[in-house]
Image 1 (tube, rainbow over the protein chains, first blue to last red):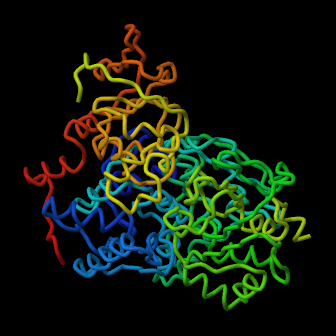
Image 2 (tube, rainbow over the protein chains, first blue to last red; image 1 turned 180 degrees about the vertical axis):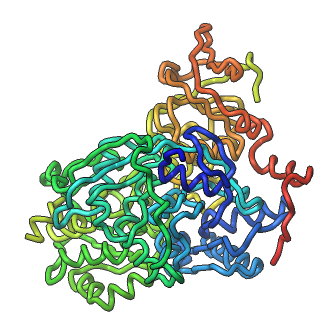
Length: 423
Length: 174
């Protein structure tokens, strides 16, 4: 039996082979195709009609309305209307409309499970890798090929193992780990290979934190961001209502000990909160490297920064305190489910009492499709990208950081080490 | 696909050109004509109006980082850009480009090529030829991706496969 990486095992299974070699080009069968209102129906419907064919398997399709909701303006209303009408016309069984961001809502409903091969019509689709599934992002035309044929080509990647030894300090998160790796290796450090996050610190992360790591493998330039499934994964799936989740045999879905990987080691305990300066996630540096950096707007949102755990982190900093005068703090929870749970825990009230404005649960300002970020300001944000103009305002300077760090900056109106506030 | 002798005028841009530069988020709600009008407006404001069919874009490292929005490649096709030549591309952008019929040429020494230069492409020999005759080596493009670009993108290949029966048709409606 040849030794294989987790990525190789997942791709072997998807291509009906017992083992595969790095560099081989395979045709894989797709277990799940996810897309949203922006990448999905408005592009797929006319192309399918032009081809005169339909969906290969509607049970394997998941549609999420998250980019242009809530609708504002004629064009966004038209895009969302197309999505809703097409969902009805196709009798799609899995449609999640205006209840949160696809990368959070799809796992919430138990669609992504260990061993699956999935594609998403969004660049942050590697989020699914947190469940031990092979998942990556594709454009709309490639998604057309998937929904018409049920197949897609993949070149078997090498595996870059990011091994985090030890445990994170309090106030340091998966977002800080992600920014540190992007800062060290750059936005093409992943070379479109498979990154696998491993080590004690990764195993200690909750499922939502693991999703943040896998999500940001998009910014590392890797195709997939995998984490071997374990009891934490199965507990999440059980809570998500996946039948038999706790009894699932996941022993196969790990990288064999002697499989060939490129390994990088990190000391989790030594990691300080990270902040990425404008205009690249690769400009990440320890928070202490930003003395006296004023902040006028703080944004807690996105699939990678406003899940329940992110909201909890923000509330830990903000509870019983008020944000600084002259700072705007916006919170856009990543899903309605997480917002409801945060409400039950008193988190939403604590954030509002601190001065936060609560925005709808959608992609919002992260994709720059809406317009909540003012021109000319310094913004600190839990989102994934700070390219020039990305959040909609051409002259805004966006710093990326964890929800702890964003909340701390909102309190002090400057970039601040959250550990000072939490101490 | 251009013949080896066809000369292409070069537009230069730097490293890390992201998909928001190529297809700004604010215009994503519109069709490709409108998105293309704003292509690269942040770094080369004159580009979209002045680029001519057959021109090539020569970029620094990591071209196409960011979003899965394939309009970031389709906008260049719409403007008639023949190819993008760069030392490296984002992997997702690489797939999207070929799917919408845009040729990408990975050339480690692309940064030696200057603004306004004339270059030609010899894909069989895997090289970019500069006007002075210098040949810059480039990576092999897998044959099935070259076929895709020659066909004008994945859409046309799917049409072909549906016509010859190698791809089964499914009902258009539920």
